[in-house]
Amino acid sequence: MAARARLCSLLGSVLALAALVGQVTGVKNFEDVRCKCICPPYKDQPGHIFNKNVSQKDCDCLHVVESMPVSGPDVEAYCLRCECKYEERSSVTIKVTVIIYLSILGLLLLYMVYLTLAEPILKRRLFGHSQLIQRDEDIGDHQPFANAHDVLARSRSRANVLNKVEYAQQRWKLQVQEQRKSVFDRHVVLS
Image 1 (cartoon, rainbow, N blue to C red):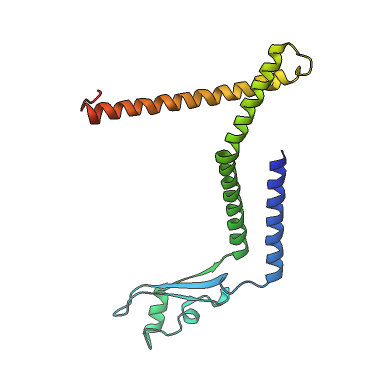
Image 2: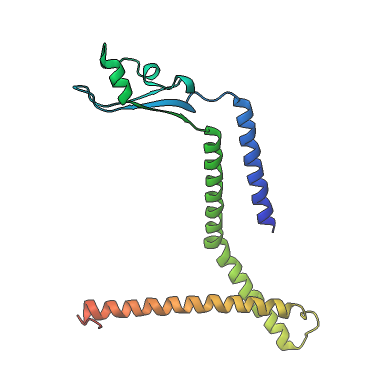
């Protein structure tokens, strides 16, 4: 629950930061709007793509194509073949998405580090603690550890699952080694 609350507060702070950045910039970045004209080949002129930062009402061939590759009466025919589109994007949304993605990736990386480094240490402590409880139960003093028995039973079931997985993994590794020996050393292929 605490991890979920931290994650929610982290995402809230990221969104607040993004909103603050959006309010500070206020005016759209010059890279957020553009008019893109794609002009196919015309007569002896190769095709071109033209980009220019203009308003939506000025998004046409005459305003975007600065150095017209054709002259005279061919200008109108050239411009009719061009396809111009007004494009708008929100760089703040892109930034927020990247920050959220990197935050989740960082959390997963931290979780992986926890699983590889901290869990084996905790596992050793758990097994050591369970052996101490078993020794105390053997002595006959059940009163102080009345609640610990339920906790131990739950941890044993988790430990049993881990032990089964580890045992299956070891058995699989031994089978692979045996197959390698039979194929490479004895040159026998199992069918």
